[in-house]
Structures are given as C-alpha cells and as structure tokens.
Length: 427
Image 1 (cartoon, rainbow, N blue to C red):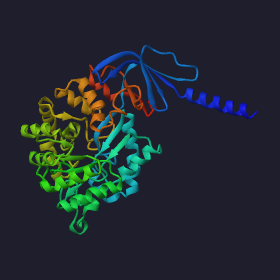
Image 2 (image 1 turned 180 degrees about the vertical axis):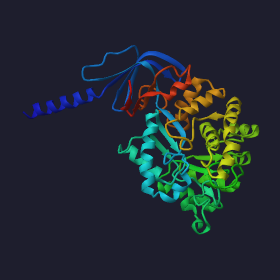
Image 3 (image 1 turned 90 degrees about the vertical axis):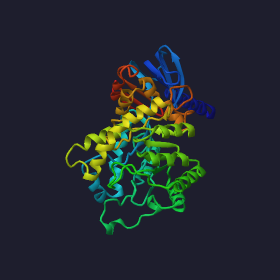
Image 4 (image 1 turned 90 degrees about the horizontal axis):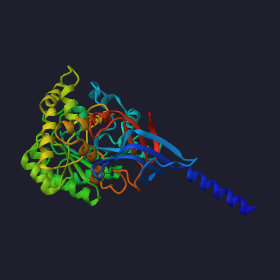
C-alpha cells in the first residue's frame, strides 16, 4: 500500500512537472547574438527557463501549454538601463513632493512598474528616487507586485545644492543641511559614507550627479558638481562593494572628471566632446544616451506652466541636443547601452528610444541588440538574460510586424513572459 501511495505521488509530481512545459511557436525570432532573423522556431520553456530552441513547429504534449506567435516577431525581454520608476512627469510634480508621503509614492509606483512590464521591458535599472524603489524591487521579486526586474540606486548622490539635493527650491527653513544619509555630500569622507549608506539601504548600483541637471530646481544644468577626489572616493568605495557607478552628466568637464575617476557609465552626455568620447573609449566607459528624455523635456518646456521657469529654460536649451550627441558617440565607437530615462516622460513609452536611435543612424537590429544582449553584457548578466537561448531565464516578448525593418512596431508589444510566467497575451 505504501509503495502504491509513493508511486502515485511520484506520478503526480511527474505529471505536474510535465504540465509546466510551454511551447512557443515563433513565426519570426530575433537572434540578437548573431544579428539575424530566424523563422518557424519552437521555444520550450520549463520552470522559468528556456530548455530548447529548435527549427520548426514542435508538437506539444497533451498536458503542455502552447502559445501561437506564428504571426509575430519574438524577442528577448527588453532592458532599460535608466528609469525612475517611483514617479512620472507632471505639471504638479514639484508640488507633489510636499504632499506625498512615502506610502503615497509607493502606491503610485505600482501601476508604473506594471505599465513598464506590459511594454515589454522585463529588466530595468532605476537610477534614483526616494528609496521606495528598493522596496518596489523587493516586492516585484517576491511576486507581490507586477513589474520588471529592478536593479536600483536607491537615492542618487549629489553635492549640496546639486542636481539631486532634495531640498533645492525650498524656503530656507525647510532646506536644513541634508547629509550623506540623504545622499548629499561634500568631500571624499562624506562621499564614502554616502556610498556605504546607500548600500546599507539596499542599493544595487550607485548614481552620482557629476554635473548640474535639467529638471532640478537649480540654476545650472551643465557645470561640474564634484571635485575629482570626491568622485574617486565614490568609485573606489562602490568598487569595494562590487557594484558600479553611473554618472548623470550633461556638461563636458564634469563628464571628463567622472570618466577619469572610473565611473562605469555616463548618463545623458548631452554636451560630450570628441575628446571625452576618446577618453571613454580608452577607459571602456559606457554611454547611456536617454534621447527620449531630452526630446520630451524640450517638448514639455513649450507648454506654459508645465515646468518652473528655471527648469523650462534649461529644458529648451539642453534637451533636444542629446540625439545629435548620440549620433556622434555611436559613429565614434563609444560603447552604448539602451536607456531612456522613463519617468521624465510617461512610463510605457520606452519604445521611443528605439525610434530616436534609428533616426540618428543606428541600424534597427543593432538598436534591438542594445536593449537586450548588449544591456545584459552591460549588467554582467549575459549568462542569464539578453537572448533567447537554451539555459537562459525565459524573459520573452513579441510584437506584431518586423522591427528589424520598421522599428516603430516596438510600440505594439502583444506578448510578455517574464521568468516563464505570461503577463500579457493579446494574440
């Protein structure tokens, strides 16, 4: 009797495991590794991983799930290396900071995370918020909230009065003197403390504002904000923890200081010179362009009252230049990772970065690779993600049309699978 019970349990376990197989029939499959399009492929997914990719439409078993994507183009889950998932652009954004408690920010972030996932972005790097992004990352990882896999900086690091100083624009009795706990530093000692504090909070990456910024309520948008020794202290301390440093930068001098200090990536890079491009190639520094943010900020600046006057002036002057900088950096051979700065524009419209990249001269297939395998290499997770291959995590999306020929079809994502679970199937 006992043997029969054990055999029955074994059969149930076997049947359950077998039933977990998902057969995806892909009419077109983007092979980002070889930069080619495969046709009539079957992807088999089991326990959240890809177990095989074969030519032809394989017949699933009676207990297997079959997904028909024969009339679609299948790609790896997309990755955006620069988002701010806690919030979103709005004419009331600057006032909301005085109204919203941490819980309000958290609840507002939940639909933004889901919208990002539904747009086909299964992995993102969040480069700065209030710290709620750390809790959101954990909630998504635990399955309590729908959203992309998040690598987050928590709170960005800034000097007093710099781009990420949270008290900019406040009246003096509210400004106080925020320190490293708030990501505001002055000098190498405080730089080290701030990095350690962000790691203590749970940051996966460190973000510094190497120059002024466009959307902060501060006068300058491009001047350098840190001395070299401060940046070196940030990078060295982050490296001790085995994490990298992303540097927000618009002005060229601030970029050069950041690259010399050893930052991993330059974000935005609006006024980047040829000399800086050369230095980045020598140092192996990555460039995350965020063209969509620049174009969006310039457009919003033309809406009366959308931004405070000091912000609108910077947005008009700086924003739209990013696309030209991207074109020059790409032609120069600087390493480029896909990142859009979602939050500066509405979340879920991340596909626009593809359009701007292609407009600026990057071939469509290369743009698709930048948001998949290239970004996996950038994050050093290419053994797990970034391409549709046997053994990798099953992050798989599909679009109608041929994005290798018309990149604008990336707007219409009809299928999203993350870690083997289907979140969207508008077939």
